Image 1 (spheres, rainbow, N blue to C red):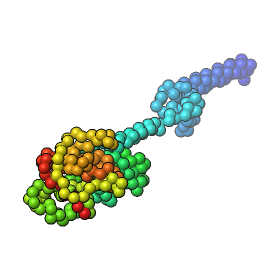
Image 2: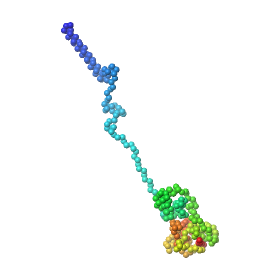
Image 3: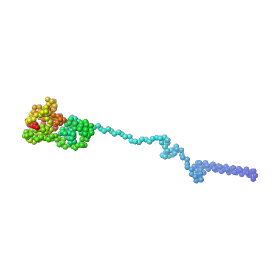
Image 4: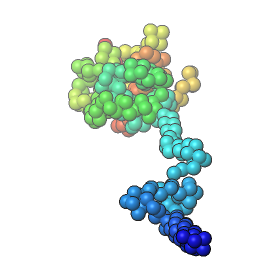
Length: 300
């Protein structure tokens, strides 16, 4: 082979190698652009490179991982706020010393049912009733003030029953004594010191009866047979400056009359010689029926 032939063959080989190189380069660019390379052509699949974090967050905000700032933010406190309970209302006073009326009478009758009041209900709230209320409160673990507040009243209602009319208005606290023979005829105030009762009798029949209290050993109530000589509805003692309502005078300054002290203190006290009545309703009724000249018999 001559020199020219060898030169031409070398040129053709160079051209052929150049063409192969161009094809290889072009195929490589196409593989990068389309994501398919020589390995894909041979059946080998390469996993795609993960997208940058900010691109993933933009592309899929619902599944994006929290950023560093978000992961450090504490969850809000969802514990409900507890409001303090309002304070219970203070007990309200319903009855106290000086109170009068039907509710006081019911209080006394209910206390009597459970052994804290051993008197006849009078409807007058004073030292005896206050002591009975204090005793009830002390036994039940309540502040023993002697006044009847809403707590004391509710406690008492829960332990007792509604009083009957006989319990609210008993004839007398003590059994009525057998009438003296002098009381069996005419219109008579028949008064027994033994039973401490007064019976208003008309022709041997007891019309009404009530508890009474007498004078002390220093101011005794006289015994014997007398007559009513003066009635004084709103009388006030000039000697002791004390009220003597519904007074029925029978011997000097001694009279049958209502006594608020007797209603309040019971038999722990005494009169200055008069016959005290503690039930105002009964003495008021008696005062309207008795006439001047009616007989008064006081006996043991």
